[in-house]
Length: 124
Image 1 (cartoon, rainbow, N blue to C red):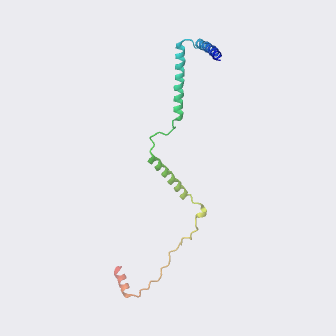
Image 2 (image 1 turned 45 degrees about the vertical axis):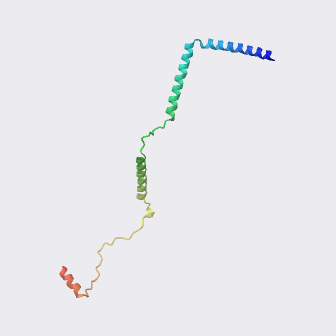
Image 3 (image 1 turned 90 degrees about the vertical axis):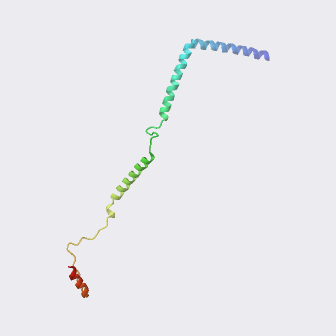
């Protein structure tokens, strides 16, 4: 059993050696491997830049003033309220009586008190 395992082990080592030889023939020299690794690193850097650009929030930075945003929101709400108050439907208007065209008649003033009559004479 150990002889069979050793034989399979040697055969596999032979296959591995041939596979490595074929890989080395395909790759060529070490400079080609370095060039290939440089190309891979450049592509990874480009992918990282694209990922960073995509994940960055658009139009929003850290310089947002919350107080300014709240003031703007309150202004918009006030504009909406003003518009709603000015937009009164015709059905809400109440019919009012006509304004009189003649001056009202004066009621007769009774001057029962002599003191009041004297005071009025003195005042005029």
